[in-house]
Each structure stands twice: as structure tokens, then as C-alpha cells.
Image (cartoon, rainbow, N blue to C red; front, side):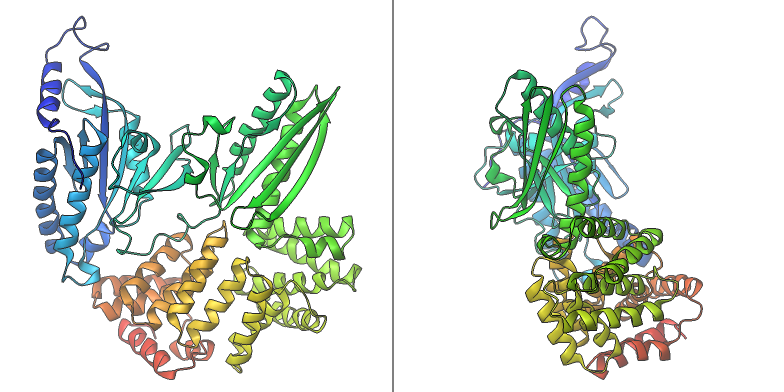
Length: 600
């Protein structure tokens, strides 16, 4: 049970009251401003705009009831409610335990009120909690980084969930609370990396967490080793700082800076929950400096990647740039592809491996120009190195990826080329699994032999067990076979493995939920995809059908208008031909909902 010392609201009222009318000589800082330590709770209602659009009167009444609830809990818990505006509130407390006790009480009360309500009418807050110095102005307004940070970390909490900062974690001494480390985060307009923890057991069963969070690959950057003099150690620490900065720019990659030494880490390594460890070392000899870096997977301690660089001790900045650029590119390659490039090292010469790395890098940009460059690079391997099995696999993957992601100007050509390259790769017993992956997808979309598609997908996964796309293809096959839960699980795993939040996986998740008649989850998943990629046709179709199934007439109408503006040529009979569901009843249900929604 959470226990808080009986102090708070009276001391807060006294503190803010005493600032009124104070002169410069008696105020703690310049002007009539009080500076003091506080624990800040910021909360915001998830999907408030959607609920307001669905039923404004019911939503306003619900928020009014929650305002009364929050006011009572905060007052009795020893805090002060600074404001409750619209769908969010801000409360301040003297201590972390009191803040967490109030937060947990509010969560429990909301959970109880939500019992018996349909999913789309349930209201959940996201909470963010930070501790630090704040300023209270003479007119009662509150300022400070703690308020901003609490607001930022609540946006990355799952609905019904609570995120706290490392500062709160350090202040808590409460065995009843279990805090799970999410690593360090870059927050908008906050210069420092902020360590974030999730309160386990709160909101875990409310909703699936956002796909990019916290299942994205996480890397802990260990201290750079330097056994030499102070100058060498300074180079090592500068290299570590530069690596952390550079890796922070990799989309979706969760980066934790352990610090200059293990003893300086604010949490033990066991609290990091990082999937990978990045180790580095600097050695200086005369006027030359050599740097090493190595990526290890924590679960197996297998080496995923390693490299070394050398430069002049008189220009360590140039060396840092080399190490950072090389490491970032390796992270994109190894974590996006999901498999160490040992096959390429065995089959290809140095120039061939350079083509592979450049191709994966270009493909990872997600742009049409990048894809074109990757396609040309990978197909050049087939032309110049016809005995290399990896060339056929990579060329097949590039052609297929461009077609399914809408990057190709001639998708039928690229589907055909992908089939030819993949067939050759399978015949050569491609050890990477990429060829089998492409074959599985092509057979799936042909709809002719679903069992063959499943068999090929399983071979791909067996050969590429750490590749996100392997799981994505398997999930795509499983949803068409009607095994919607397995499809969701496979695509969730794909999203965990990839540092890029591919909208393709989210679309499969939305479709799978629809297959399982989990319409609220299907709509929520589709909305997340559309937020990032508004022109994702299948996500729009799943969203419209799910909203229709939920009886959300107004939202359905708006979705269909948006869909037809973007895709005026869409027709239900064409959709029937493109989606090979084994059970025709699923396709009939989808078409019925789309017809009722107004899709021609």
C-alpha cells in the first residue's frame, strides 16, 4: 500500500499566499516569485477529440465528473490542483510518494468508472510525473522545466498509463511500486536526455502501446574505454558523447547514455533493459589514434557488428565524425535488416559489400529516390556477381519493397522482376531467407496457394529470426488465413525489431483486429497508421469499416470522404479481387461494412 506523509495542500497554499505582496528583499528570487522543489503531475485524456466528435454531451459530462474526482483526490492527497483546462490537468505535490499515491488513486477510480462501458466510450488519462525546481509567480502561475518535462513524457505514455522521470524514480522509496526503465529520451525543447520509467501494472491492459514505443530497438552506449593518459581519456569521452548525439538522430532508436564511467550511471545496467550494448575503445600511439566499436545483443551476447577507424591525434574531430557516421550507418543496416551481414562477408568482395551497405542505407531512407538507388545497387550485384546468392535475394527484396510500398512507378514490372530474382534465389538455396520472404508475399497476393505462402514465410522466419520483415510477411499471411491473433503478435514483433515504424505492419495489425471483430482496436491501429501516412489505402478502408461496425456515423462519413478524395477510383469489387481471405465470410463482412459506409 502506498503511504504518504500528511503534508501538502496547506503548505502549498501558504507558500503561494506568502508570495503575494512580497517585496524584493523578502522574496527568494528577484520579483514576486517563489522558487521551490515540487513533484509535478501532468495528465491528458487520450482520444479526447475523437470522443468529443462522437458524443459531445456525454464527453463534457464525463470530463466534469473527472474534474470533481481529480480535485478531491489531489486535495485529500496533499497536493494542489494548479489547473484543469479542457482535457488536461496539472497538479503539484511536495513529495514523490504523495504524487504517486494520488495518481494511482485517480487511475483506480477511472478504471472502476469505465467498467461496463463500451471500448469507444471509455476515457483514459495519460500521466507524466517529474520532480524539480519550479517557480510560482505572484499571480499563482507556475513555471519551470519540471512542468514541461511532465507534459512531454505523458504524451508517450500509453492510455491509462503513467510515466515518471529518473528524478521521481530517485526520490521514491516505495516497494509497492514497480517501475520499468524505458531508457533515455530526447524531448522537444529539452536539451538534456531524460530518463523515463513506466509504472508497471497501471494501464497495462488498457490498450496496446503505441507501435514505436517502447518496443523499438534500444541501445545502451557504454563508456568508451581508454587505458592511456588523461588526453586519451578526454578523446574517449568526447567520442562517447558524439556517438550518443549521432545515434539519437536515428529514427525510432532508443538510446541510453550510460555515462563516462559505469559508476556515473544514474541506474544500474540491469535497469536499462537495453536490447543492445554499444562498446567502444580508443587507443593512442604517438600521433595516431585508433577507435573501435562493437554492437552486442544483450540476450545472447552475440556480436552483431564491429568496426575500427584510425586518424590523427591532431584532428580528433575528424576521427569522431568517421566513427559516428560509420556507427550510425551500421545501426541502420544491422537493426533495420535485422541480421548481421555475415552472408555478405562470406560471398562478396570488399566492393560488393560496399554496394550492399550503400543499398541498405538508401532503402532505409524511405524515399522514392533512395529506393531507386537501392534497386540499382542491388540489381547491379546480379549483373556483376552472378554466382553470389545474396545478389538475387537483395534484388528480389528491393523490387518487391518498391512495389508494395508504392515507391515504384511500374509496380507490375517490379513484382515480375521480384518473382524472377526470388525464384532464382530459392533455387540457389539463399541462406538469408530474403528470397523465401518475397516468394511468400507474392504467393499471398496471388491468392492461389495460401499454404505455399505460409510455408515460404515460415522458412524465411527460420532463416531470418531477427528480421522484422520476416515477421511482417508471416503476419500478413496469417491474417488472410483468419489467424488474427497470431498476425497481431507477429507484427508486434516486427515493430519491436525495426527502428523504423513501418506503416505496413500497423496496417496488417489493423486488418487483423478487424478480422477478429476487435473493431475498436482495429480503428485505433488504423488511425495511428493514417496519422503517419495519410495515403495508406488499406488503413483507410479498415478504419471506415471499423467505424461503421461501431456505429460511429459521423466519423465514418468523414473517413469515407477523405478516402474518396484521395482514391476516387476505389471500388469494392476490385478490393474483393485483391484480398485473398481464406474464409469468404470475412471478406463479405468487410464489403458489407464498406457498402454501408458509402464506399462505391
